[in-house]
Amino acid sequence: MRTSLRDKNILHGVTGSVAAYKAIDLIRRLKDIGASVTSVMTDASKNFLTPLSLELATGNKVYTGLFDDPMAHISLTSKADLMLIAPATANLIGKFANGIADDLLSTCLLSFKGTVVVAPAMNWRMYENPVLQKNLGYLKSQGVIEVPPEKGRLACGEEGVGRMADTEKIIEALRAAVTAKDLSGKKIIVTAGPTREPIDAVRFISNRSTGKMGYALARVARRRGADVTLISGPSCLNPPPDVKFISVNTAVEMKNAVMEELKGAAALIMASAVSDFSPKNKSRTKIDKASLKSLQLESAPDILAEIGSMKNRPFLIGFAAEAGKNVERARKKLLKKGADIIVFNDISMPDSGFGTDTNKVVIIEKDNMKELPLLTKEEVSEFILDKISARRA
Ligand SMILES: Cc1cc2nc3c(=O)[nH]c(=O)nc-3n(C[C@H](O)[C@H](O)[C@H](O)COP(=O)(O)O)c2cc1C
Image (cartoon, rainbow, N blue to C red; front, side, top):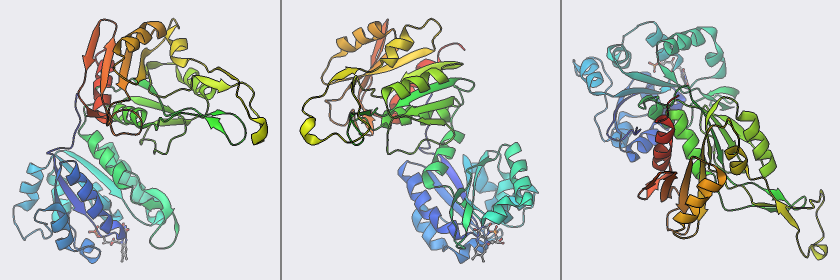
C-alpha cells in the first residue's frame, strides 16, 4: 500500500480571494513532490494574482476564459486525477453547491468525476454565514473534502476563522485523497518524541529524539484511514491533522496516557524514546549548583514491557535504537519485551536515527526479518503499517 502525489495531475482552481498569492508556494511544494499542476483562474482572481505568475510556477499554460479554448472544460478534467480549489471563495463554493457553471472553473467542477478538495479563505463572518455553511455542508456530504480555514489575523484586520489552511495541511489532504483507506476502523496509538525527567525546576534528563518517526507514523496511519492517537513527549513538530493529540512530559505521564487510550486499540506503536531512568529526588525549586554533586536515579517505567506482558493487549510494535549493527540485541528485545515487532534502527548510520528525515531500519518479527534500504520516515511508516493492515480485524 503506497501513497504518493508523484505523477498525479492536479487541476487547480484559483478564485478571487486575498489569499490567492499563497497559491504560488503551494504549487512549488506540489511540484517538489512530483505532482503536475495546471491552474484555472476566475476573472476575480486576476485582481490578486497574474496568470503569468501561475504559468511560471506551474510550468503549464494557465486557463481563464470559458470560450478561449472551447473544449477546455472537458479536456482539462478528463486528464486530472484530483481537483483542488485553493483559495476557494464563498462565491465559488455557492456556485458549486448549486450546480452553477457560468465560467471555466465552475464548469470544470461539474464535468469532473474525481475527488475535489477545497481550501476556503474569507472573512470570518462570511465563513460563519449559515448560507456558506449550508453550501459547504452539502458539498462535503457529496464527497468534497474541505481543508478548513484557520483562526488568525485576517487581511481585513479582523481576527477569526477564515485564513486559508497552510500549505502542508492542504498537501496532506491531497495525499489522503489519493490513498486507499486500508486501516479504516482501526484505532492505532503512536507514541513519539523523548520524555523529560525533571531534576529540579529548570533541569531535566532527556534524549535526542525529535519525534519525526512517530509523527510520520501517525500522519501516514491517519492518511490510510486509521483512528489515530498520538501521544508525544516534548517536540517542535506540528501534530498531523485529524489525530487525537496528547502531550506529555515524563515517562510516567506517557505510561498513564497509553493506559488510558488502550481500550479498543488494534495496535500500539512505541516510537518514542522513553527515558530509562528518572532522578530519584526531584526538587520543585532550582537546586544550588554547589549542592548538585551527584544524581540518584531510579528506573522509569518500561511501557513496552508492561504492555507486552498484558493478556489482552493490542498488536505491539517497539523500536530499538542501537549504535551499530546490533540486530541480535534488537531480536532479544523483541522476546524480552513480549512485542510482536521490533524496528531496529541503527542510529550510528549517516542519515538515520535522531532528527533526520530518513531512516535505515530492519523490521524484526518472531519468525521473520526484513532489512529496508534507506527510506524517508514516511516510507518506513508505510512498511510498518502494512504489518497492521495485513492482520485480520
Ligand atoms: C479586496 C477583496 C478581497 C476579497 N477577498 C475575498 C476572500 O478572501 N474570500 C471570498 O470568499 N471573497 C473575497 N472577496 C470577494 C470575491 O472576490 C467576490 O465574491 C468575487 O465575486 C469572487 O469571484 P470568484 O469566486 O469567481 O473568484 C474579496 C473581494 C475584494 C474586493
